[in-house]
Length: 154
Figure (cartoon, rainbow, N blue to C red):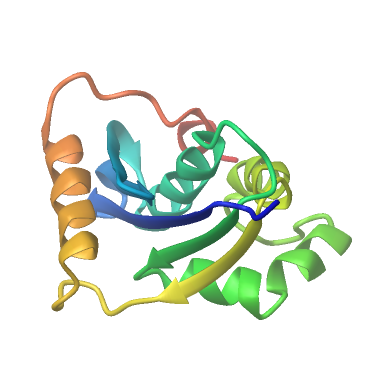
């Protein structure tokens, strides 16, 4: 049995950083496409970049997929691909930001076979550009949620 290949594009945005923020996601699998986005009243760009990845992985109903995540966030790519995250876990995230989100990320990440691919933001990648549109529209829209982790100083 082969695992289904899933392609995910994500982007995060924050107006003011910190400020109003949002994430945008494009999920591609076979002939299927799903777009997701959400805005927050006060957050940071890195939190929205990471939350987009988390929500995308959590949206996958089954475990064990081969997943390639395209992101313009070097923060996320380097944290995972260079192993920084696993060192942060060992040190209890001492002096690291976004612990709440990284701790939410880890189980979602471990359910799949994930690799990250960095893409240049605001360039010629149509799916990354679409994620940016979704993220900024969510940040600028109504119905903004509270980023509890940010506002409570996680």
